[in-house]
Amino acid sequence: MNDNARWVHPLGTIADRGWEVAVDEAVDGWQHTGLYAGRLAAGERREVAPDEWEHVVVPLSGTVTVSSEQDEAVLSGRASVFAGPTDVAYVARGRGLTVLAHDGPARVAVCAARASGEPTSSFRHVPAADVPVELRGAGTASREVRNFGIPGVLDADSIIACEVITPAGNWSSYPPHKHDEEREGVETELEEIYYFEVQVAAGSPATEGADPVGYQRVYGTDERPIDVLAEVRTGDVVLVPHGWHGPAMAAPGYDLYYLNVMAGPGDERAWLICDDPAHGWVRQTWEGLDVDPRLPLGGTR
Image (cartoon, rainbow, N blue to C red; front, side, top):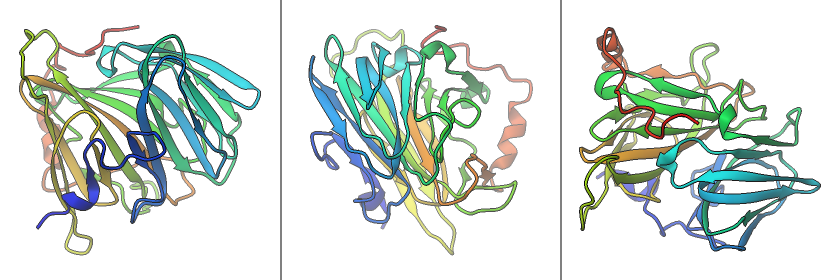
């Protein structure tokens, strides 16, 4: 019997306070990260109360205004998560925030992480043009990573966040890796949230009745078992408390997107990972292979 029932949350099954997706410490076994996601009609707003969590607001589609105390920023959005990077806004712990659909309907995600210190900036607007876009892997392991919320790009206390686009037929989060224990210079202990969206592959003819779908794998060790193999669709969430995770699989015919949110109990804000030794050798096979020419999927901005 696998652990999908505990760690996989299809759209609508973890809704709260007007959000279609609401992950925070209220989820059994969850401590360090959070995610709220949902739709806003034109002129509609959502509020997040001040607490001990820091937040990053990510428009999934449409444009939103984010305000926090005396600070405000208009986040120029996009048609969809597959269209390219977006503006984001950072709000430090202890500050509430309001998200307002700017001039039409919007969909938005608010990433969260438990924080204890103060970054140098309590509010920051990161324009899409300043988001580093990395093309990672090669061949059928090619993917596009939008690093808007990582160390060196965003000053924060504990949160690490990014977006990953995987073209139809490719594998991502691969080789399987983990980050569930503190080993100085080798690995950091981080919870991770995967929020998914899926579309019919870019350039495909419109197909009535298509059912865009992807897959996600998480597995553990004898000491810390976990067993997840999930079919995922737009709005679904997979939580990774520990263990090896990957691949995230984009089925042929369907492009796959996921938003990652990570944080942990350690003092160091860093994404240090360890490959599963049974599969780490796969990285060597990428040498000499080209990156998938479909990337970056949304083009440059």
